[in-house]
Length: 398
Image (cartoon, rainbow, N blue to C red; front, side, top):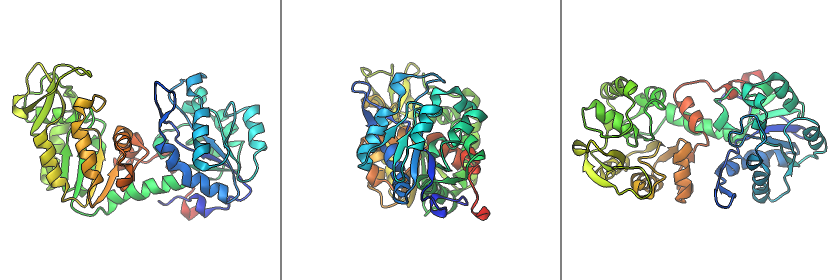
C-alpha cells in the first residue's frame, strides 16, 4: 500500500480521530453483540495509538438510522465490549459533534480512549456534508482510517475529514491491502475462487478483474442458477437475473479462453418454499422440478468442489453456497467452510455473510485472512479505487 500509516507519523501527545467499522451484529433476543470480530480486528491500531501516547477518538456508524437518533443503535454496548477487550475504560460521548463531543475530546489524556456516538444519527455523514466533516475533524489533530469495510463510501467520516486533518491508514487497513492485494498480484498456484451468494451482478467486475489470476472458478449459491440457465438447464422458481444471462455467458467464455476451469453444481438441493419448515430434496441439475427452487449445492457438488480445492495453494471465497439462514439449506456452505479451515493453503474470505459463517462455526483462526469489508473487498478486487483510501496521504508525500 502506497499510503502513510500510523507507523509513519509521530502520534505522541496528539489526538487521533480514528474511523473504525464497528457495525456489528446483535442477538435479537438478548440485545448483546453476537459477533465482535470487527471490534477485535481494530484492536492492533487502537492499542498501538494508546501505547504511543495518543488520545484515541473512535468514530463509527451502526445500522441505518437514516439521520435520526435511534436508541437501539447507540454505540454504548460496543464501547463496553471494546473496554473488555482492551482491558481499560472506554469513555463515551452522547453525540459525535457539538459541545458534548468537544468537551469529551478536550478532556482526553494521552493513552485514553473515547467512543463518539453513531455517526449516522446525522444525515450529513452519508451526504459528506462539509460542516459536519469540519466539526468532526475539529476534535482531533490527526485522522486515521481503519475502516476498510466502508472505504468505498464517500461519507464525511471517510473522505470529508481528510480535507481538514493529516490523514493516514490504520493497521487493519494496511493488512487488508496486504492480503487482498496479494491474491491479485502474486497468488500461489493453483488458485481457486469460490463464489456464491444470490446475484451475479454483485461480482461481475471482480470476476472479470481477477479471473486471469485463477486456475479454478467454483460457482455455487443462488448465482449458480443464472449460469445453469445459460447452459439451458431448468432452474424452476430460482431467482434468475434475466438481464445478466449474457454477462454470465461472457464470464464462462472468458474462463474458457483464459484456461480457467469453471465448475458449476452437478446436483443441488431444491425446495418448494424457503422457510425453516421446508424439506429439501437432492436432484441432479438436469432434474430440477419447475415448481421448486435451488436452495443449496448437493453432495456430489460438494465432493467435486472439495476434490479440486484440496489441490489449491490459494483460495478466495465470497458468498454462501445456499440459503444459509435455514439450517437444512446450509450444508454446502458449512462443508466449504470446514474444508477451507483444514487446507494447507492461503485462504482469504471476502467479508460479509461468508465471514460471519466462518466465525460462527469457530473456524476463524484456521483461515489465513478474513476481510472486514464485503462491498469494499468486491470493489477493491474489481479494480476500483476506494475513495477512503485515495484520500489518505501518499508515502511519496512524506
